[in-house]
Amino acid sequence: MSKGNLIWITGLSGAGKTTLAKRLHRDMVESGDNVVLLDGDDLREVYGLRNQYSKEERLAMAKRHARMCYLLTSQNINVICATISMFDDVRNWNRTHQTWYTEVFLDVSLVLRTKRSELYLQCKKDSNVHVVGCDIEPELPGRADIILRNEGTEGIEPVFNKLKSQLNKRFRYA
Image (cartoon, rainbow, N blue to C red):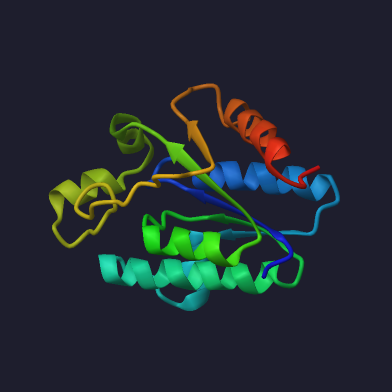
């Protein structure tokens, strides 16, 4: 089993996953934690799989993310993974294999996600653009450990503060 913490931040495009993950990463580094930030878009670049967005390709990518996280946490490295990964199979795999697993779901309305991400408009115009929550039905987390609404205009700090408070209650987070 893993030794490090895995904080799996998920939500649809435009939910604020990367912004929240970067803020949390900075806080954990400042606290002296051994922590790595893995972002879904960055991992896509690392794997050289930039144009694979079908449901099947997304599932395969999400499984890669989960296994990469396991590799790192098994070496006692804390991992923050910010990824859409809207698949129950992947989240269940994480729960089975990760000793210290926290699933964070950023819940944001379609109206606000559309304002934040042009992908939703592209999806409506072009049938070749595959967007989870537009033409790919998401499997929304049914048992996320932490659910955060990210609807505010005051930036990421209020959402971050709620997340940090919840993480402090769950496990070893300084």
